[in-house]
Length: 402
Ligand code: CTP
Image 1 (cartoon, helix red, strand yellow):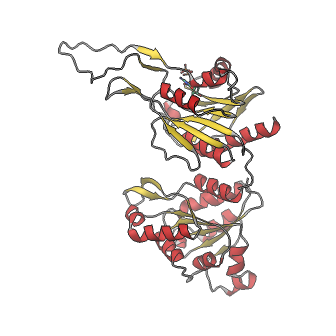
Image 2 (cartoon, helix red, strand yellow):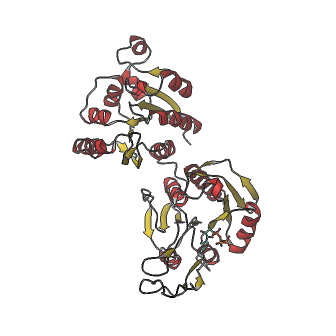
Image 3 (cartoon, helix red, strand yellow):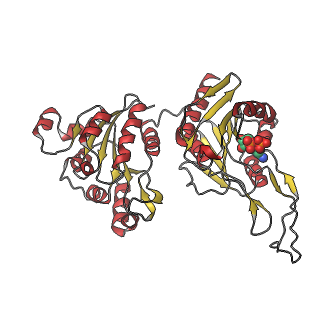
């Protein structure tokens, strides 16, 4: 997707620099040429040799390296690229960028460029929250710099919060979106994605739920939107951040999810990635159910929930042109998925094995099989973000062909 594009990657001095090695690999796998500037701080964390080996190019480190200047001046270095990516962007590097300093090769290239700049901040949570960093961030945004992340999580220093550099996958998505604004094969199409679990109340404090994180569904919504689809994401309760550019409807129960899907209008594409609870409590108690003195346990009468995928697939006159379901199985994955595709009336099924030992439910990786009218495709294990991107590309191909 990035073939022919040239990225100038500036690797700052933070522990997240190790992820930039993976970023180089992923950018090149998408066809981009990657040239790197390694700051003095960055070189404390990764070696010029590993950067050079992965980028397949010379690594630029010193501003006053006459050899480099003879070969290529720092102005040309930044102008030669289609996009500058700073990853990790440390608090110090952000501050120097915000103030227009040019005291090393990285900051000089950043000041000399007339190309778009993407930064992936990474720093301690308190540094990220400090008013000085907030000011610098606002200045950089005002200067037109695009910011990806940071993500929330456990930090190398042991603290928890926002400050972890965005994952290489997320940075590649941002790079793709920045470099391919015209390559939006799904422009003009509307996509609906369901994601996450549903919560079915038993009483005001208890509910029936499942372990779905919403990661896969949210990534699919982001990927469809990145390819230009006007995307509505109907999501059960999840921790995932709403993908940018996507219209999100938050729901709790399966019935709410179906209602929100129906309310959202007509769609060309529907991807049902939600792990909808199959049953709900038939009559949720209006007050908290109390323990009984005689030791007897309450009986929970269940009612079956509406099947959203089946309903959308059967929608008379309103059926999306392509309906994609998921099949989460713990055995005989493809066999059950084939049956499910027929039973639900959808066009494609993305099937995966969610046995606890796979770590797929709630995890970041997925191994899927795509079932279409033409047969079964076994996809390589990949991150949920990559699965989302591949699926969005397949959907785009389908609409180009049809
Ligand atoms: N699905 C749905 N509404 C439901 C149940 C499932 O939209 N009430 C969708 C899911 O989003 C998924 C597909 O149907 O795309 C298959 O979900 P799954 O839980 O694997 O299938 P079930 O129909 O629940 O079958 P079973 O649990 O018996 O395997």
